[in-house]
Length: 85
Image (cartoon, rainbow, N blue to C red; front, side, top):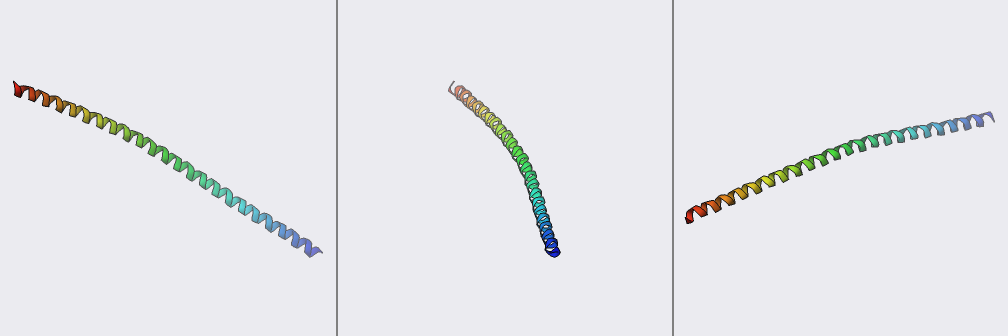
């Protein structure tokens, strides 16, 4: 009878230890995933801000190109006007 009690207590202890190890592993995985998610979130924010800056730069370049084209058109008109005089 004593042996059954000892085996029962050992079985319960093994189950509890196994459950504790499993719980600790799951908690570690969850924390690791949270860290990865935070890092990815930061990277996404950085890429988003870079994209916004790139878009702004493209708009500035397009605006400069438009001014250059307008300037060239004005010069063409002026040259044509001088030729016809």
